[in-house]
Image (tube, rainbow, N blue to C red; front, top):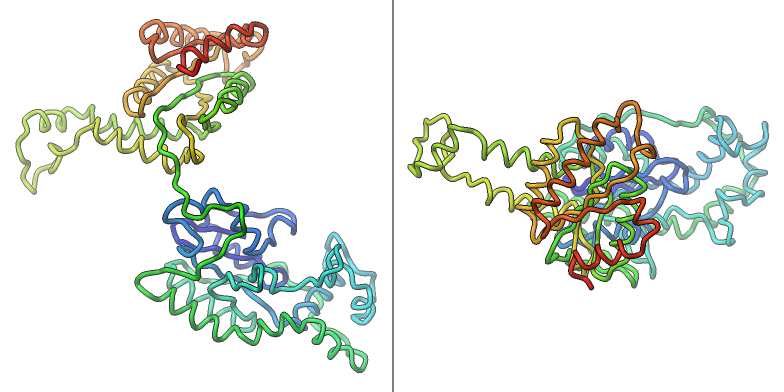
Length: 429
């Protein structure tokens, strides 16, 4: 299963339909790639939408804004492919050497019947409750190359399709009289959907080719909230700690407070926003042009620089970061994240904390120290670096007591008053 947010597609990885090959083409354009075991990789649309509701519930990112597609095989060919694959390939659940298709069919194992006794059908990947069609296009396997090429052209992606994970045994021996008819009757529900693919795909491809891409709407199960807005928080809290255990404990405590949504580490992505903002703020030529307030000529080296205001830009990217990275839960009043930054130069930390404080709404910073002997290491957390960071923490707290708070994690574990002090600092008492 893959989801491309920029390209706006959801790919359903049905079994024995060249899904491994398709993944190789789609993966560079996917933001979410679910791989691993068959249970993780091969999930259908009825499971995808509630699983990734954090995406599909966002305004403008509902299921109808994504092109939803996969591949379906003639059911008789599909189960034959499974038989050949398990008989001739090195797999976790191989069939005994020399087993006939008739004996395989008689087993009625997980390929044919699920653990609860229901049929293992391809339709379940694409249809939800009440047989609701959730896919826009279901490519017939025998038309895979041509249709996938067309889809890739519309999504502006390269379309070369390798072949991977194929069955080593290419042919099936002759079947006993009546067995093929029995198999086809068993898959009557799949055959019903398979017979409708031309009409389904004509409509789906027309939507894909349309200038305004609004795809098939999906009726999600109860409990999901399509279209619910990301909360706009009234304030932010950022936790800085060089000890993951300590930072995680404070993060957990904060998230136990009503209305708080403090996310985990994110590679300090906001640090790069700071650098982008500072590139505009600290360039001397651009600064001079802003101060002069004169319109620059179209041929000027810094044409338009007089219109670039660092604080305006910084607050805009901070707001975008909150909405698109932090994505606070509905009804959150306070958003934020935990940072694990341990820079070699505390000047970076100084600039970073200043950027967060000045550009995010109503920011509070929580610094967390810990006994150095518990966290010091030969590379990341050297004693000298920890001393330097602690010195910065204390000096910045002393300079800005209204927006910075310092926690000694060793004391936090033993003295309940430290939790009360944090609550009071945040104004939550």
